[in-house]
Amino acid sequence: MSFFRRRNNVSTSAPESLDAETLLEQHKRGEMDDNTFLIAFGKADIFYSTPFGDHKDGGSRLFALPDKDNTGFLPVFISAERASGFYDKAGRCGFLVMEGSFKSFLEITRGMNRGKTPVKLGAVIEPGYYGITVGASMLDAAIRMMK
Image (cartoon, rainbow, N blue to C red; front, top):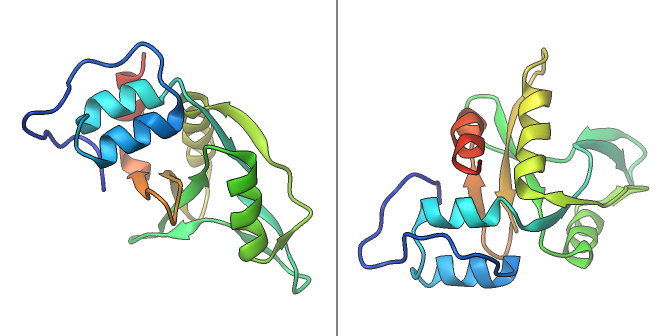
């Protein structure tokens, strides 16, 4: 699912303060349009790790989910436990789970993309549960919406 689509008969005013899981559930049920969700979720606390890390096989790799045209998605989670479970399942070892707002995560990701990187990155919220994406080419627009 990507942002910037409009749904009929759904809320278009951002709620003042709902937890991240409630926002995801409302969006999933179609009770909140994409733009409203993104604005509200920008303030939500999420958990994430660095893009590169060590694998249990002894090598290092990029822990991003691939997309087309040399782009990928960095996963973010609504709990540290889900983040740890995801990376354990992916074979990652010795990783750090960090916490911050979704907006700050997108700003960090945008900064990484400005350099000479082989893969441009976006974000995927809760892969395996919700899978909502903000593509690398949409970071600037998404961040502007969250101001």
